[in-house]
Length: 128
Length: 278
Ligand SMILES: C[S@@+](CC[C@H](N)C(=O)[O-])C[C@H]1O[C@@H](n2cnc3c(N)ncnc32)[C@H](O)[C@@H]1O
Image (cartoon, rainbow over all chains, first blue to last red):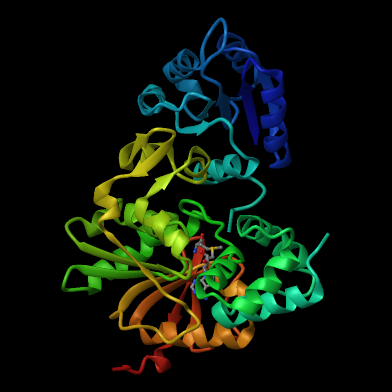
């Protein structure tokens, strides 16, 4: 399984990369939405998962998600917002834009794996 | 420092007598770390002094606090996900075909802070076959502290992150300050009660589904056997029992058989054991 981590914080990309890497994912990274679109263009086939921060320079996560949803060839990508934004209407907006899941920072590795399990995207175990 | 042998022995006996939880040698560190806050709150310099005092006075409230401090309350929303998928896809639809009173009764027997019974209610609401049905959930636990939290239905950010799908969260929860509160309509469907699994069960009626997850693991074999036997007495003959991933009935109470349900499995009372208990 492959994942793209979109976050302007290198530290955060490393943390998420570690968790996903341990779960068996191959990782690509991008520091903002626009860069992430370029990463997706560059891949031969779309990754299974994208973890997307909300607040980033150049192109924010919500715009990125909206852009990805416009492209039929990327329909299979599961989009998970991973952000400190925790207001209810934010979550509603992200879901309306096409995010499949929403994980609020700070989170534990376990919480992220539980989200992946919900999405049926946990390759190493079934969670049972 | 770690807890002294005598203090450990006292705590071990107390916890075993009150909850059947087995604290093996080697768990000294766990006992120490769980009791330090209680010792401090009671003004004792260390756990040994606190336990020595406790064993002298035996104040019921203080003893209860110690037992509660040593239970593990770890839980999450839709824990392990598969059991809840099995509920929605096979168990609930099967019950919907056989229950003429359009009522399903469920018991969550070690509900901790409430995530499990609330997840059951949300799953029932997501099951088309149960539209318009009455779903009664009785949720019980040994810990009054956990039961209070469960009744309140208020969860921290970290807790809602754990296993709760975002769509479910925005649908069934309201933000309140820094935490999230599950909606009244869901809270109203669960009745929380204190219940010690190691004692004879109070009158509760019959259940179609029982969740007894991640609690048997703390008990010794005879206790597990007694508990499973008592569960049979409150279970509808064609009822479904869910255990934790590390728990099973085999070799414990063989009146149960394990049957696959989706990617999960449930335990059912064997046909020949389904004598109608009054
Ligand atoms: C690890 S939690 C499991 C919670 C939930 N069933 C789950 O699977 O997520 C174990 C719970 O069992 C409760 N417990 C321990 N001993 C018990 C007893 N003798 N009777 C009733 N509940 C007990 C604890 O208070 C704790 O809330």
